[in-house]
Length: 181
Image 1: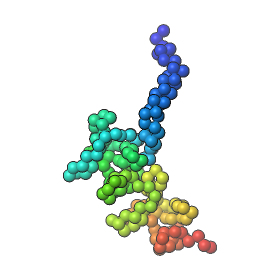
Image 2: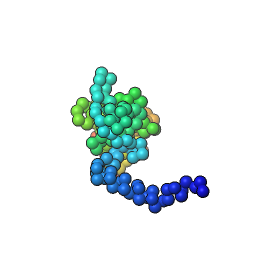
Image 3: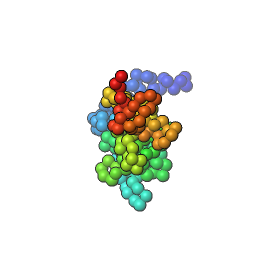
Image 4: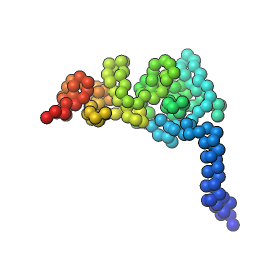
């Protein structure tokens, strides 16, 4: 019989997987399994060293002796994206059909994906990214209030509207829709 399923019956595979997971959790815990990027399937977990040169930051992954390029990575609870050239993304980046914001400020979280409210001084505007880092557009309810973020037909995509009427509703200087009747 050339049936490969007979060589590794399902219960043996499940047992082997359970043993491997037990060894992993004992050695590394669950911290390495949490993904904060837009999807877990698109993230890798790294161990190695940060390297800075004149062009920016890269990360040498000691697990495979390479620099991540064109991919998301997870490092110490933050999500990072490394461009095709292997350098860490900062600022606004359009990836796979969505806008993401990566901390451009030097320091410990430089390059980390930002979620929530973003005040961008370059645009002199406020933006919002959802819990998986994607910039929102149109009407969105945030912390119990409605806000409008430019869908890009006229002006800067994702910019929060302030002190104006949108779709018949007034948004104040803080961007909140006036819900009084």
